[in-house]
Length: 294
Image (cartoon, rainbow, N blue to C red; front, side, top):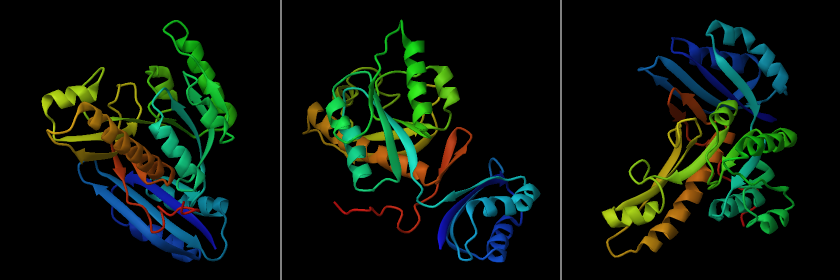
């Protein structure tokens, strides 16, 4: 049996869930997992349903057959093959912890992605990327060549068919034009101190202020630097006895975990944009399983 996912966003009104359930039942589909949220402040409704097509309906047939229901409730909806791999371009500078973590998760099938290219403004990780049989592109970025460099980046994205860009500690600010062109399709990771500790050495700044929690935030990239809709966050506790170097080390681990969870939520179609915020549903049963256990 084929497994699919349906995502729905529309104005909140009575009868949406019943209409979806009736469509599934009438077309030989069995819902295996569902999540929904009614935002009473904005009046928007969000739904994600995992299901099996027990009579063998195809993705095209499901989408076509749902048109009347979608039109009745003025839905923004999509059907997806459950577990289908998303083509991803990773961008990195000189901090490789997130890149290496993603390469490992990709290798064991822990993330449903295909890494189709890695782009960097340095050569530090060329060997590790090429050794994984992934195309590596070194694109230097300066104030003078930024438009040309971003054009090269977008050419790699288009040529590879990438559906998502992941900034795995890529230390360059993207232009407003690129952010707008790839809206909802660029995910970034940064330490959670922003905007409290901006600029260089944020962990040193945090140490000097005696913080008790450090963490990381993963978000969609927008023209507002580091202020895009948040997908995932986490923290780790620190004490007065630890050093700025301890903060950096602990922060690396949190950043890698938070970024991978954000990517997973995005490619599993669990993230819904809701104005400047997001609705993020929990993973379906088996959503974290790997093809290999190590």
